[in-house]
Image 1 (cartoon, rainbow, N blue to C red):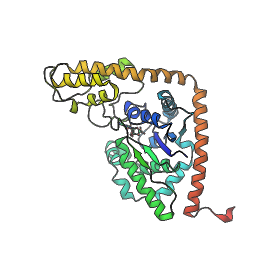
Image 2: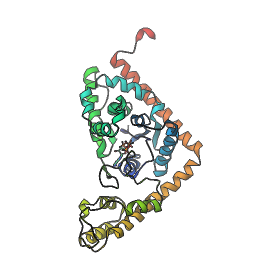
Image 3: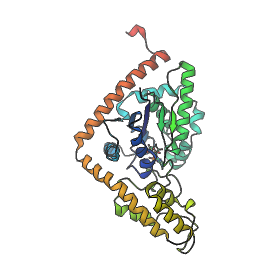
Length: 330
Ligand code: AQP
């Protein structure tokens, strides 16, 4: 029996290279080793203000991006969270063992409460409990996550411990799989790249758009003129070079930056070409997929049916543990 993994992305906008490098690209490498369930976690995306009319389009876009980037439905399961009702049902049950104080201290809740002052809703606070339900519904042993999601996963582990201690052992404590690209900063070099911040390079961006954004992106703030030597270690774009460029190009840019041998624009040009080279086939494949909606529908229908089977079995076990498997009703 292969170990199971669950992870997902919320369809809160177009997916960016943080989602690609911190999640999808790593998931591709895990498909052969683990029994993988990849979700489009639409209920998570309702925790900040959103456009209901655009939800369907964003879900389709997310599915097409997963497939175009290389997630293979012959090797993994692709599903939509809201279509397997046990995700929210289990969330309620987990809510009863999750102290409010655990949720109040989550960094994302603190950050988003500041950013969305007019909409500090219960869902925003309860996001990690829904995430815990997403994962343990499939009894996942591991979760590939970016660094930003680590506090959430730690909370999942605490919730699992609480549940198992209260009702008896049922769920494994999922471990984090942290891989390359664990934290991609926005092009302003400040916060992490986020769909809800205007700081993204999207997986869909054309070579022209990539160049337009990179040409004005923040580098080493101390390097004002081309003749100033810079420090690649503090340059946000250098960290992207390490994920997109060859060893020779990385060495060339690092040396050129330190000695002021090359300017930031030269360095950005190399990076821009490499990113475009990696993203263009994905963008083109995605376009083809979007013209073949019946295929996307079939993949998701099959994935949802598969997920449903696992979820139904787990929730029956949960009923048994929590005392709601009423024999007199049988
Ligand atoms: N900047 C990032 N660097 C590395 N990994 C990232 N991930 C997201 N942003 C980065 C990884 O993508 C997966 C799912 O992310 P998500 O979109 O569901 O949630 P999010 O992190 O809240 O994404 P955004 O873009 O910040 O969305 P908004 O702005 O709508 O809240 C996770 O594995 C995550 O680590």
